[in-house]
Image (tube, rainbow, N blue to C red; front, side, top):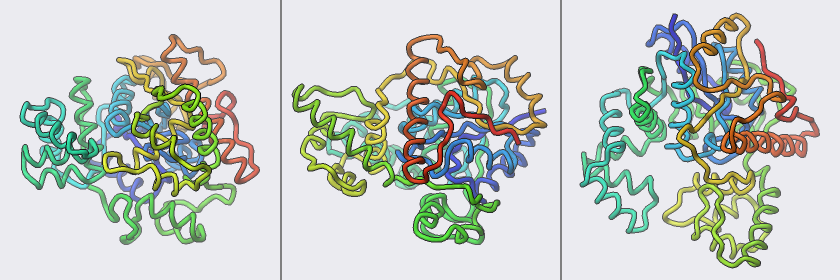
Length: 400
């Protein structure tokens, strides 16, 4: 029997995800499918719209066998770190024969050519990249421009599309890890990533989130394969603005006392610190983004940085990015897979959180971030809904 692995956020799980899952199993011929999923905070620097256990439960109900959580240090990181951490976890679990990812481009050879260029970095590419960075371009923009000089404008266009970016990083991670896991690509179907348009019964996750926030839940019924649970309450990016304002006020106070001391918070640099010092707080979430934006930093990176400030996530990294995988949900009839995972895995599986004991300082910090992220998300959820969610040490596993 074979297994295909997917790295996802399922924010929320929708028809496009269901299509990708079915195609992944069809193309690979795999009998089973597992996922590495972001927890309560996602790579775009926002809280997930639904708690992690609920999102994992929906994913298992519609075809996945097991869902593991990616540590929040990496689920909220750059595309490069997010992709590498996910691939490393899949590789370390030792059960996957394939990794499947969606892309706007269905030619895996083109994606691999770009990935090899970015991984190996020829002298000409490095020179062009440095030149574009010196001109004040953000790193993603500079990399795209350098790629255009190396191969032509059409390759830069491929690089500019969000699913392609992650696909490139997944292939790069497989190469760096010398992994035996085989990659397969599923062309994105229906609406584009982050699109405000819909196509047939397909809509982007952003469209669905925006619709939930501004309209009735019934408006998304065509785009998800389930009825929205009446108990489901939703969290959005602007729900964190009060907590972020509080952390930024603390940061301003610390900077006032300690001068220009550079904080070790992930993605926080001296330019952003200078901008934070000048903020006239409090501000709405959208106003914070507007005040802090600049030519050389993307909107998503700004959101991630604010989230890292809120969660206190520092720029830590080890040769082993993710030394553990936290179990979120599984299908009852797939429980036999755990024997194979336990026999083949190079990392620990956390299924009883209260008994988990970190093996070293790095692992302890990663897990501390995970626990605190759950506490903060639960606070947001309670403030909005008056519903108590379980803390990290007492949270259950969804068994379907």
